[in-house]
Image (cartoon, rainbow, N blue to C red):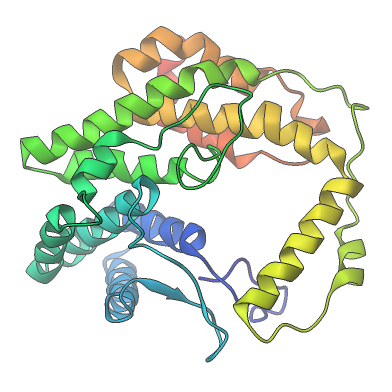
Length: 302
């Protein structure tokens, strides 16, 4: 899955990842069932999703880069919460869209197969293991919210699709557990002054570090050098991540859990959206849309 396409409509970064692939499946699944596409377009979407699913199934869910020999970037079969939720969702969504029983069978198999002393059903029930605000994060246990809450969107979707109450209970448990752990992180949201730290919008300066990359390992090494330089050039970026991006993603997690958690914490969730002056920000925009629409326009004042 491309990490964005250039203005020519073709050029793109060679490396995808599981963080690129999951939203592709999730977005097209939502679109195909939304009533928005015509019958012909929906059929085209379903056909594409199934073909990609078949290719990844054949590749044992290792996620390829867009050049032979470049390597793979990520997988959906790692034994942790993040990847368990993603694999289970994609398999269940493939069945939901196509009606092919093969995908439902694979979903059931992957749900309960032995996995280093556990199962995916147990992993999703245990959650991501978020710690308190201000503490160190790691991956895949106690990860940052921005890189992990898409897996909770998977749990919410699985909860909607699942007919076995015991399995649905595991999804509900993991979603509620992590949403509860996310609540203290809402308080990190705060207004940032327009002049509070520098953000250099000239990303082309990072091209000075560019070098050809023959493998995914070389591409990752280059990206790590560039992100360190980006953080040095733009300390404002870290402020926005800490005080806007993370609490907003935490709010989306609470919104995905829904129910009493939202009703009891609606004011704190709203502060993650209203504490900032949007014209003065450089990052962390679309997350607010996720929170707002997940709660629902008519529910904020309820």
